Length: 173
Image (cartoon, helix red, strand yellow):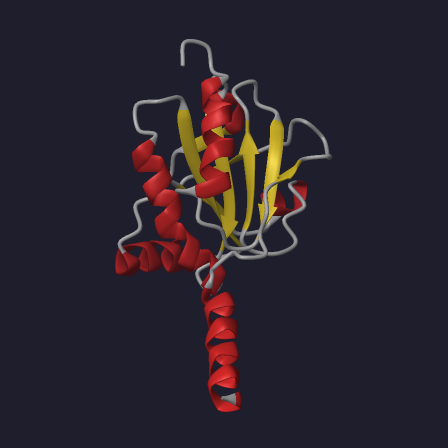
């Protein structure tokens, strides 16, 4: 009987450790309302967060070597697909890697998110992205409202509710 109980405990602990993002929560942002974000996209065009005012923007700082970053990317893609046609945008900001490395990773992993490059980590520093993945939600007025540190499933649960609440605040949504 003790063996069975011990075995069940091991299984329960394993299930908890496999629950990606179990400790990650979305928090209200307490810093500056507006943060600068202007960077080159992977395709060479210049993207400025100010140009996206009127849309909710999920800004995700990530790197190819970051396993939790890689694990959460499919959920960000599902969220983007779910909100297609609504005032919502994703900016995946690669933290500190070369254009070649990022392009090779995206092709190999079949990731189709819009990626901005931050090879000198200037954007990440301005946003105080000291760990990865770090994600921010910017409202339709261009104000940072929420943030999360660590892997999260953005396509369901509380994360989805928060994003949908922000999207609903958009004029005409």
